[in-house]
Image (cartoon, rainbow, N blue to C red; front, side, top):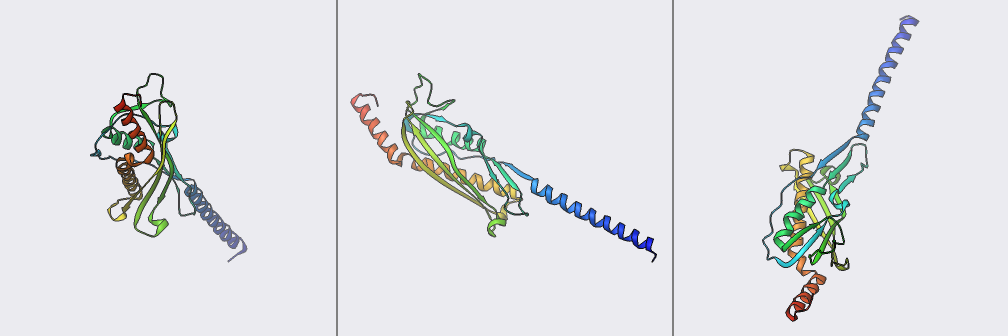
Length: 225
């Protein structure tokens, strides 16, 4: 082989290697920059409970109404995950609360405007949100944990009760067609768990019990609660 042929061969080979390296680099960059966005959606059962005899106001903060969970990848094989959960969490509470109370009013601001006749105002907030998929745990389930901070106020904006409510959901991968479907299903199970927790335990919260007892006593004596 002549010097010229050898040089051409080396040049072509070098260009091929450079092209492969460039394509590999582009693939790594694209993978690192990609984001999987899931808008969680689903339906929720209506609770079968005796209604608490009060008119409840509900205020969803901007952070709660537009809540998004973001997971930053910890390795090259992962991509960023964004879960849009604001609308579905509002849907859960809007399904849950009306059967639980005599009346429920959605408020646009807090404290309520003058003239409002609600007795208490509930403000739910997402305190913590976590997820796990089979690639994290090596277990064939998708998992979601949500921790809520539930706050209850009177009309003057004074706190009545403040408690933490946790929920958990998991879904076997055997029933899922994709990771997105598995994550969505686990999130809905977690939100249903939160709804059941709230429906069963609201009147058991000590501060809520005390407020209801004082209200009942005031009504019996004809006083303003």
